Length: 337
Image (cartoon, rainbow, N blue to C red; front, top):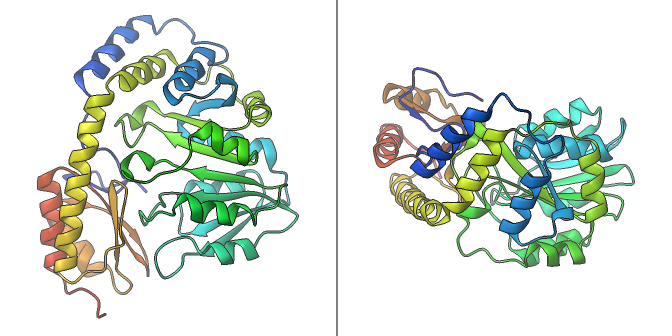
């Protein structure tokens, strides 16, 4: 959901609060002189960059127009009309939409009381027509996470005829979270697809750079469904420069993480229930009338994402933006325990 254009602090879409580093901007400017030329028919160089960066075979890489674009390519590849897709609710908005596009039955499963996936309930919704099970880890919109041991215990309950789409859009913010490297994951779980993006951690959302890592034959099937010329020269230049600026990206992630912890602690001190987040956003329980909170935040120029009857998702911004969030929440009585 787009933030209001009049807002000063745009915290509704989990965007990186900082513009790209100078090195990325310079690379984009240089690539802009070649825009009259077509990009590669198939983005093989692009996939090679990701493969080298992530230390995986190039055949296991699928790149596309943002992680959402890659996910939709996967849906088109494996889902037929009448099949079903199991996902949590709420979740990333694109997944219910993709079910509509491919004419699949969406099977949303409410989150558990800990603001995480209800894995037992999700397992109970799977059957022989389930083609994809979506797990956002860390989860969007709550920021919560499962350990690798918890995930693999659930993986064992997924039919071999269904794919596990593990959306790791926010994994770079989950410092301390541990799991096997991707080749080892795929070797053990050939029906696993790991989905990632540079939009969040690297702050280049407008370039729409996403990728999936999967078993080679599955990755090839997805690539066969992709539109030619889908990734342009600007995206390739942006990817190269962003990967090269790893130290700067890590420093920025540390700053965002510190602000997330500070903001979350202040909101809890004010009496608000805030889910433990390992992402660049916070989930705050706002189960009743959200209008007073919305009014206070909008008065301070803050746009966040509201989930009626559930909560508010607040992206972590720069310090002045986060201070405005704290002031806005502080002006409203939190819900009773």
